[in-house]
Image 1 (cartoon, rainbow, N blue to C red):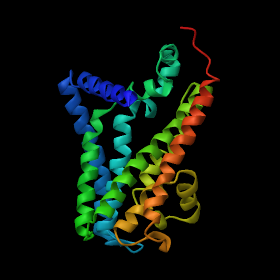
Image 2: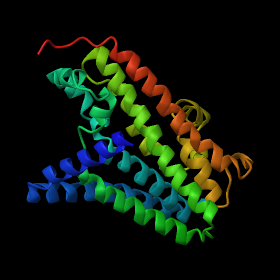
Image 3: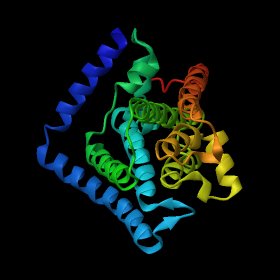
Image 4: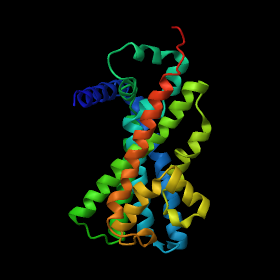
Length: 266
């Protein structure tokens, strides 16, 4: 609980620091809006051209896009310390200072960065989510609301865990490993659409290796009353837990990798 209060306090301080340069903040935030709006425009063009994609209606596609965007950019907004800053911490020697403090290294890394510019991306994802829900005529129940919140939360943990892979490799290679981006950023782009539209190798990759299909697509399809693979309703509640499993495994591996960290001597 004390760690959570520290994290919230750190996020508030970082947000205030970003807002010290108001013009720069708003221009960069607008740029993020244009970029994410362009990605949503691609979905709109697909819907306008094909009406449906392998049985998924346009509203369904908006819903999947919205869930992925909200999950991914929430993670980038509040987990910037691990998603983007960690490799530079190693190169510049900043990580050394974390090792002599009384808090855990992972906690300090998580408190070290935020990216409030992503708020516009989250807003675009929320709009897509609402559009998809309305166009798909989703009848919301307390259970469906719970599954939606659980899916987004577990997807955030999954994405954070996948970003930790880059942090782990950075300890050994100093520079970030671009191959990891194929799973993280590549996964975001691919999994904005239903998993069953892809060939078998990609379905296996995003079900077993980076299980976006389990944390996001299975619950989303059940909410839309089109359960994937004909799985029962309770699969929508159980499968998102794979996100916390990936996060826990990556956390253990992160601490194991830290034992092999060699200080810069600064």
